[in-house]
Image 1 (cartoon, one colour):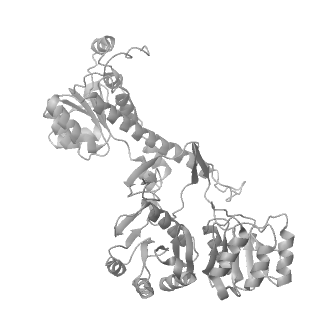
Image 2 (tube, one colour):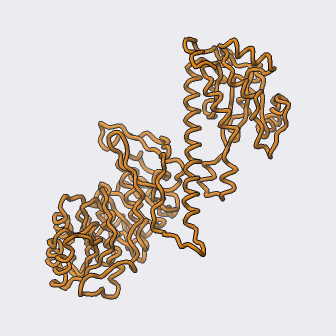
Length: 541
């Protein structure tokens, strides 16, 4: 066809005389077909769609009868036929197209109703590879693309059951679908296809990357190697319009990433008033902070920084110790737990008389939930079981986006290096691991002072590491004596070590790697402080 053949033509009228229905999700299917049949629209249908309509008493012309070609390859080839695609792609405004249809005996198809094999649902349940491949739809996307492309030529496409009644109503009143509606539905169809294709592409990329990590007799994989970043990023679907953004004069919304089924974006509000943009930010920080703790953990977050963090043998104790770290900052914060919330923890929260915005956890015991729901302003939020870490991390910048692999976390203790004369006492390795986990969660520059696996004082987001240290010391107070210090990056000078000596710190954990590491090591040796290097930095901007 000439590129300019339709350049100056108005959109076709959009009369609907014949419809092709081929759907996996049969929501609203029978009602749609009956509504169309009532307007004398001929119904063409394939396989399971035809069977469902015949069972409901709808008169149907099966695809194989319409084309004269049987389904083959276990149903892989049903609608991939020139009689079908010519009928969809023929532009009603062009005489030569009408002639081609007439000469070949191809009647026009005016409405295509199609949704696709459930690839994304299979992805969400971690289906096996052969099932993922079988859920790659071929005929469906081809039908949808053809119909959407020809919206100007008079064809209507439906991919969402929510639009069925609207189209039936238009056909009932006028026998046609107006061009502005066809264009809107075509845009929606292309968005669905784009999202579907991207999900498949990302799954294949991950499948290839995972296959390269399989251990063989000839090769041991480097499990610390970051996975390849996608050439194109996942599509995000808007799932909720929020009251506003970070501030009341900004709009805000929540989007969910294609192919990801864990984390706060996939959770649900169990009770309480609507969540805000800032609530979601802080809930994400609180839950991810609690999740990465080794034992039963609790995190209390303000402005995405943990002001309370602890792990303990019981959940109530974990909460109590987290709160003790900074009870002033905890007021109006968000609490995250890595285990189902118990009634004993609810009692501890009530006894503390702490005002809490939200509690986020993988679940709530029935009695705990019933008690917490008595507070109308308290939001309870349940997160799906599983790691809340996203597939990748991003920062939006002007004109684009920076994307990186998610920080894999603390380097394994057997890779640490004790660089001071003072060795670690028994139990100190676990204490230092907690201190570094706390520092990793804070905005850079970050320093965390901890003891007995709970956060005593934090310095976060300072331009100077000395300022971060002084803030952490001020928060920890006298409790810093015999405590442990974690830093998200190396010490460029020995000034932090000298402050640590003043605070009574017993041991330090930091990445190391400064040109002046020797100065800090010497200062630790002079003060009798143990220090280990992890060789892994944890900046968080």
